[in-house]
Length: 103
Image (cartoon, rainbow, N blue to C red; front, top):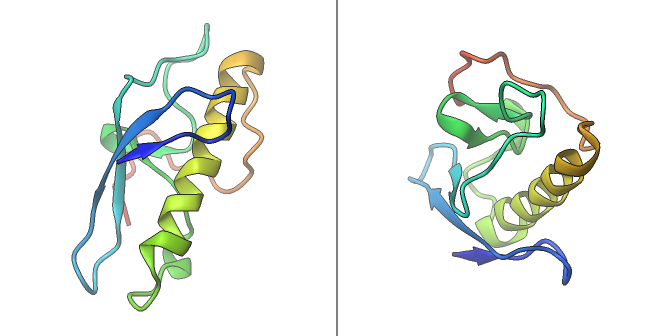
């Protein structure tokens, strides 16, 4: 599904995998996410570059993807674009350890 965080942003193709009573998993398919110079990994991601969009307890199976996961993905991408420019993650939240597995 295409997502464009703001009118000046690139359009990204996101893959959202979801099964009822499980947590959604989001990956950016294209363009390939790149690193800020001097960085060794993408910020705020789990293993396999799955986006870290919410705290484990924040997602509930009755929530709608359209009002949670989609806007959270757009917000993540906006912070990603700022990170590419500045090298600083401005999205807040908890940064998973490099080997962390998704919720």
